[in-house]
Length: 104
Image 1 (cartoon, rainbow, N blue to C red):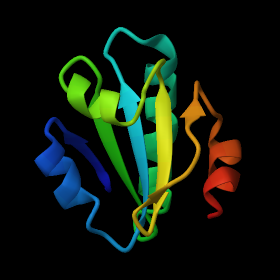
Image 2 (image 1 turned 135 degrees about the vertical axis):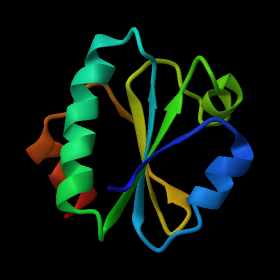
Image 3 (image 1 turned 90 degrees about the horizontal axis):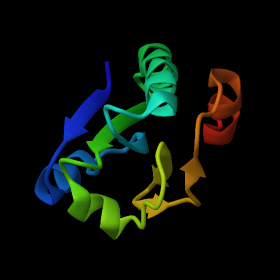
């Protein structure tokens, strides 16, 4: 599986050094839509582990990373392809729709 949890900018920087598409997901334990999206992310990771790496950041444990990415609400995700970040994906997104957004 390609789901990793990071808490520091250094960890994030290391995990971003990949040739895979990165889906950076900001979440919190108390967030219902975040829990729903977690299932989608796990499914993506299982089916497309050779193409995508999913990095999860808990906004309560890593507010500095959340601030750097201008996270105003959660769940908040970013696609990072070749170290370039796309527009944020805010809220819950179903599996098929997210798969299309990623292009896999």
